[in-house]
Image (cartoon, chains in turn purple, red):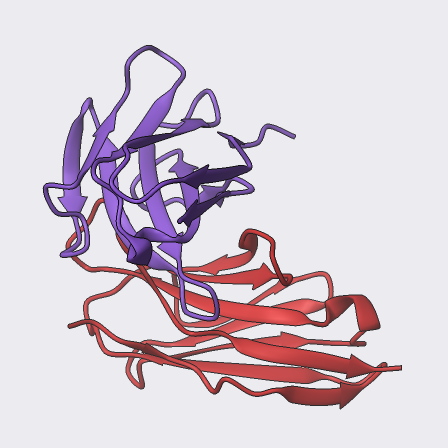
Length: 113
Length: 112
């Protein structure tokens, strides 16, 4: 069964550094998403991406964050000037259509020191 | 702020019993509803989606939706210890593009 792939599984970074989290969505999906989950808290929507542009973003997704689909398969989340509070699990998800369920990758655990 | 409310639990049921998980949501225009299962330290795994009022069954799982009451539930029949996990209710916002708001999840414990 096709799946969403995320790399790396764990990223440790010094505060203030930039990180790029990578995702390969399911190949025939058109809608792409990033979520985060701080330890012990709920899954929070960050951004949705469709037709090569951001379609919606939450208040969490400020100028520190950006997304890109640099080629036909990868979808990336860049976090600039990381802060301690950025430490969380980051999940990529993709969906076939805007009424279809989203399928999640295994996540990247981001630890900011 | 669109809200999805769930009882955090834990909900403890004996093996073989029916587990009933409930969720309410605030966005009256929502049309798409999902249940995910999340094991500790893992990613959400889709169990069921439901779009119309009534019941939808898939194996041991039944999702129920009542849009008038803004209520969605998940029943797990013949609960197994492997069903022990946190169950997340997720509701797609009415604005489109499938922005999904998650509840905090209900932790289910199935006692052997």
